[in-house]
Image (tube, rainbow, N blue to C red):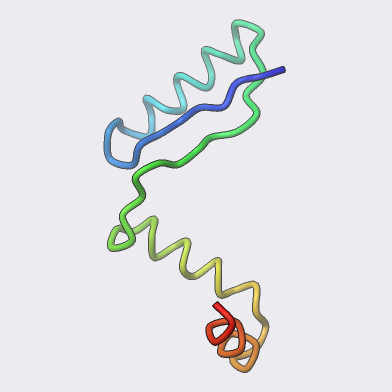
Length: 70
C-alpha cells in the first residue's frame, strides 16, 4: 500500500508539497506518486508538458501523423 498525493497547481507552494511528502515518508508512509490536478496549459508547467509530450517523437513526420490520428 501507499499514498498518492493530489496537488492542485497554484494552490500551495512547492515547498509545502515537498514537506508533506517528507513527513509522510518520515512517518513510515510510502508515497506512490503525485497526481497533478488543475494544470493550466498557459502556465510554465503546461509548456513543459507540451515539450516532453512531443519529445517522444524523434522527427516531425511522426508528430504530424500522431496529430492526424488524434
